[in-house]
Image (cartoon, rainbow over the protein chains, first blue to last red):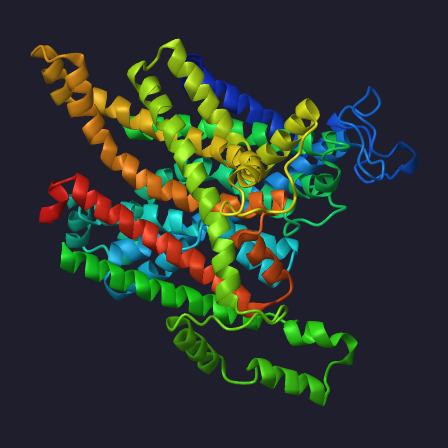
Length: 286
Length: 314
């Protein structure tokens, strides 16, 4: 009996998902692409047989062919293998950094918006300072001054969009704090900390998650740009930005070195953007 | 409004001071300053201490900052540590290049992006809307510098022409200047056209669904008047705000495009200065970036008040 309701519940859930995807082909397409990207990141070996590190100077700078689908780079490494293996590095750096900024920015924003007062003023001023630089310039300052290491790259990428999460969490907490249920919770003796943790946060998290999806393509582009400027992941590690940086000097002789990693960034950003837009659409309608 | 603007200006200036201070501290915190780079292996000597004193690096950091701030207020940004030239001049020259690039991009993005967005919004859900939206999503997904690379490859293989590497200011030869800037502007504009058109479309769609538009149509008002008086007027305000945002975004994009096309703008100056640990130039360039962002936001605020009478009361 319990088993029946469980399967019925599951059926309803898959049906609902199926219906949503049929009505929103952009979302379905985006999710499918993200599925492929996740698979490639988890098991790159399944998609690319060649090594992303193997140097073969006899086969340097070859255009795309049956043996090397995306061609080879200046030391004869297979670009296809490098792009495929780069997915894991590029995407995990972006996903991780953005998660840090959502967590930190979100927490600070919640506290700032819920309690207001001096904390809010000080944090608000600091956030204004961060916002006074365009995101990419902020990234260049941090990675440029601290040095091009992956740790610094992650730090920079975590800071760049923190203000956005801060502002969203702050606005969310402020509007929640004025709702009657907060006053009711307070009058039955709940402490502010408990209200913030148990109720306000729960209502703000969906906003932060949506923003995460919306900012993901942007952070991906900044990551690639910093890599391109030589401030990101350093070669020979296969990272999309790093491959683009190496291709820069050969752009007119061996454009395939730049075409494919750039396309990888574009397609990933596209998939994330489609999903992010659809999510935002849904939240706005509610 | 005067009082409000004064308050805003005060807050922005405070932000700028904090921002420049943080940059000042950050560049000095990391090991390997300009002296260490100059001395190489011969560090730890009297010469090193003398050089530090020469650059003023031996003083407490807040005194160094106050000295810099005081000079900056009189327009003196110090001397470049690696090139010995006055920073104000270097930053000023570079800024003009970046400004030209930015304004040209903004003009193109506005002229193409706004009409595109309006058309998409009016024909919501029709094929032309789908096509424009498809373009928008692609334009927003493509990395700016990659678009630059691809444009470069496409143009050089199609016309066997690539832009000259030596920058020419428009005052010397406008034709040469435009030849150099054409590709960078196109690469930058693609993203901004997409961003603009997407934003305008959203606003037009929202305006079209407003009850007052329905009323205006229902009472028989000519479509043209509904469009200009009711829709366009309400869409203008967000467009102006967005223009400021786009300009700041362009300022960011310019940095990478400049290094790609070897343009002697603010972005390339900043990158080289960071590489060589030329602090005065880093500070000067970033000061300009912060000030530009500040001024743009202020102009947007003022424009707000001019366009929307409701804002004047509050």
